[in-house]
Amino acid sequence: MSYDMLAFDLDGTTITNTYQMSPSFVELIKEEKKHHYICIATGRSISDAYRYYRLLELETMMICFNGAFIYNPRTKEVLYSKPLEIAPNLNICKIFLDKEVSNVIENVIISSGAHTYFLNTRNQYLYQMLVDDDLPRTRMTVDEMRGKEIHRIVLSVKDDKKSEVGALLEYLKKDVITDKIEVYPWKSHSEIVDISVGNVDKWNALRKVCEHEGLSTKKIISIGDGVNDINMLQNSLMGICMKNAADNVKRKARYITAEDNNNNGAYIALVELLGLSQKLKSEKKLY
Image (tube, rainbow, N blue to C red; front, side):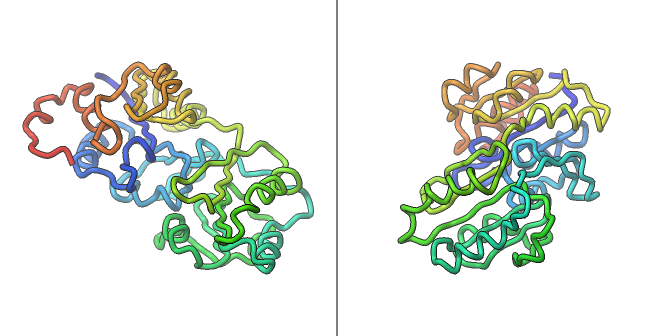
């Protein structure tokens, strides 16, 4: 299949539920990037997607926050940025510091483009997921956060305060963040609230990348599994949906993988579609 760009999601797609990317997929991408533009398109922040960008040795634009931020980590070029709109005269750090003092919040991680601000280092699971030592990171203070663009807020509440998550979220929606937001659950972590920019779209972001790089939007292969991938799957030359996706997402794709994200489904599909079947047959292990 002739194509210009390969764009793919991370969670539920090209990484397993334990956040691993298979060696065979890594090898395939390293080969394909010699001839095609490779673009990660994820809901993650730069900070928790960069480990895969680094693993794949990419030098291209990366789409994060579902299209709210387009950035090249190698050149530090920002192609597009749509931050959250915060109510005037509010310093969001002061709000979270007050919640910390009142023993509701355990930790807060704020993504501002490629920069990560953290309230503290508690909840090591959250901290290690969202803070990358190779990217800029700063302890959050009122002065540090003044005037900063904010693309994502991930916070954890204390174990005995989980019942207050709903009220805290409603407060943020009603009095703090003035535009549409998206709130994402974390599997097995009900104490975590994940807030990102709303009214953004991965396909629109891919169009911006194509325009910037002189590529055709009619020659994109995309791979995804979520509702946030639907437009990307529908509009691509070949939209590949994961076996583990919901039915409403599968209906929008041209191709469904034979295996899920835990069994190298994206790799197997690409090998077949790109005419590399002999390579697949000759391998003893898929991951």
